[in-house]
Length: 91
Image (cartoon, rainbow, N blue to C red; front, top):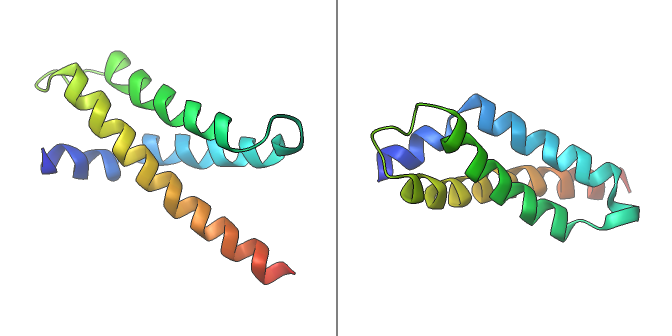
């Protein structure tokens, strides 16, 4: 399972999806907030990628989705940490 997690953490498409999820959430935070859109986006991407790619054919879908939620949360956490430090530095 560690190899699946590492492959998900280094997937450039997944990283890009999480980055632009954060960008979108930042732009719309005054209207809809941050927590719910980010949480739903993490789950959405975790379900979307195994269902639309053949990369997870050798792994059970539920395992791939579960590990996808974990890896998406980790990637998003790194981006959120960077964004918080950027905002703090600006002020």
